[in-house]
Amino acid sequence: MELARLSSKGQITIPIEIRTKLNLKVGDKVLFLEENGNIVIANSALIALREFQQAMAGEAEKQGLRSEENINQLVKEIRSEL
Image 1 (cartoon, rainbow, N blue to C red):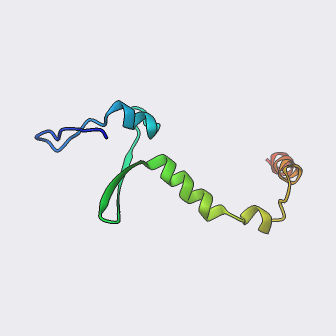
Image 2 (cartoon, one colour):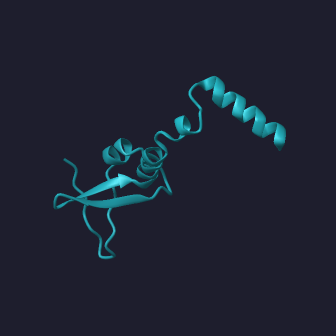
């Protein structure tokens, strides 16, 4: 368990152990979520990536991209058009 103190401006310093676990770097944004009455802090970039992955699940198959070879062929076609 880590402890942080709230400043008069409402700021806290996230302890290094927590920053490391969340893979936070200077300039990163953090997200505060409420889950079951608790507040959870998360790396917003990782949450956005996870949501994007969930939204795109199954889309490759719908487009007929079933193998790495299919994807490589599509990339070649797009590059030739450009």
